[in-house]
Structures are given as C-alpha cells and as structure tokens.
Length: 228
Image (cartoon, rainbow, N blue to C red; front, side, top):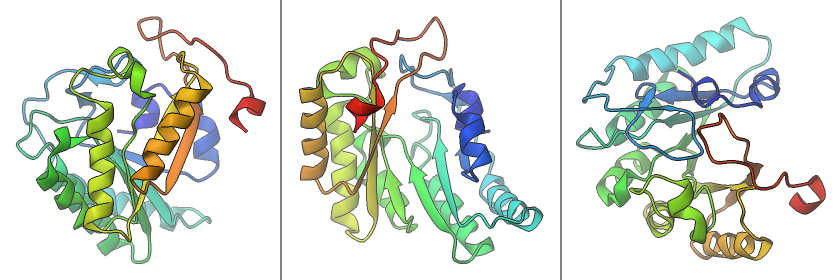
C-alpha cells in the first residue's frame, strides 16, 4: 500500500516521476478518523503481515536493480494501529532494520503515528536508528479538534518529537503543517516557534486539498508569495 494512493494525493504523479518513494506499512485501514484524510478507517483486528519488513526491503532492492536512478532515500509511514499492543512500533523498527540490511547505505525516514504518547513505543522506533523521525502536528493549536481525530492532540504530538530528540539528538526530527484550513499567519508562526523550541530540524508546509466532499472544505488556496 502507498499513502499516495490510499489518501488520494493529487501530487502523486509529480512525486513518483521525481524518484520519491513513500511506503505505507501495517495495512490500509486506520484506527483513527481524521477529517482531512481519505485513508480507510476501521478496525484491522490485530492483523499484521509478519513478512512485510522483509518484503519491503526486497522491494526497495528490486526497484534499485530495475531502474537507472539509484533510490538512496525512502520514507516509511503507516496507518494508526491503536488495536495493537505496541501500536505498530515494533513493526516500524523491523522495517527500518530489514531495509538497511538489504540496502546498505540507504537513508530511511519514518513518518509515524503519535503512539498515544507512549515513550516505550517511541524508543522502540528510535533504537532502530532512522535518519529522520517525522511526526506531523498537521495544523495549528486552535484547529486540532476540528481537523484531527479526538485521540490526537497538539501537545501529544509535540511530546513525541521532543522525546525523539531527547533519546537520540543525532536523529533529525521533522513535522508538517497543512495550510488553507482557516488558520492565521500568526497561528502558523506560533506553531513554528513551538516546533523550534523542542529542536525540530525540518518543517514542511503544504496546501490542504479536499480529497472528497465528505472531508473538510478548503478555506483558502494559499498563494506562493504567502508561502514564501
């Protein structure tokens, strides 16, 4: 599964033609129901494919052998798996380990759920040694309940990113904000400062685009000048 297809991303062709690969593990059914996301919501009832980490590693190796352009950086993300005792943290760690074993020298970024703030789950992924640990706060503080599942939260997401830096300062931390949901410039800057205060290294800003009529409407199409 890819988050690109499951989330109905409109930028799929641009990313794929540029050699960027993001793999979504732990199935295609998310236990959360965020109001901006088109990924299927439900209860996977504990099902995990135990062979997926090895299959992922082999996939990356095969893609490199079949193309003239070497893929030296991949992103591993997942659905939320609140149904699992470790919320999928151990599976994430195995994916990182197996990809590295089969593809020496490759850089790995993980884009993880919040693990409900569990320090044990976060440590499991950190100890696998990803180059970049990414967790998205998604939107500004005021709009969290409107945009995200009620089990997510601004402070909880900040705590995840802060914990990663505390456990291993050498890992780059990363987060993302969607724009165009009704936030103000001042609120975006406040979120930037909150992220910087806990040592987040990388921030991406993206225009929110409505994946279907069931999802949150776009409040503003932010012009490039405003992004700058």
